[in-house]
Length: 88
Image 1 (cartoon, rainbow, N blue to C red):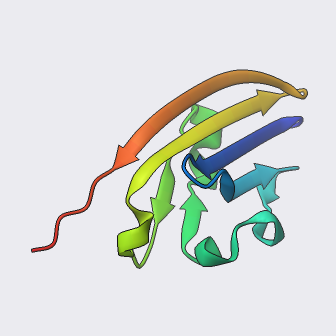
Image 2: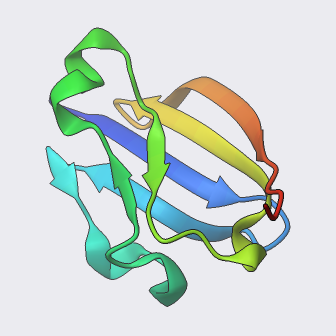
C-alpha cells in the first residue's frame, strides 16, 4: 500500500518497537531490544490489521504500546494497548 506507514512505540520509552514503511518492515529503525522479536502481519495490512507480535517476551516488555498509522504523511489512526504479564 503506497504511502502507508505504521509505527508501534512503547509509551514509557517513546522508542520505536516496529516500523513498517515503503511496503516493508524497517528493522534498522527499531530499538535494538526489539530487533528480531517485533513483527507485524504484513499479509493482513490490506485488511486493516496492524497487530504487533512480540516474540521471546521479557519482563521489561510489559507496559503500554501505541500504534499510529499514517497515509500520505497524515495520521489516520491511532490506538493504544496494554501488555500485562503474569509469571506462572
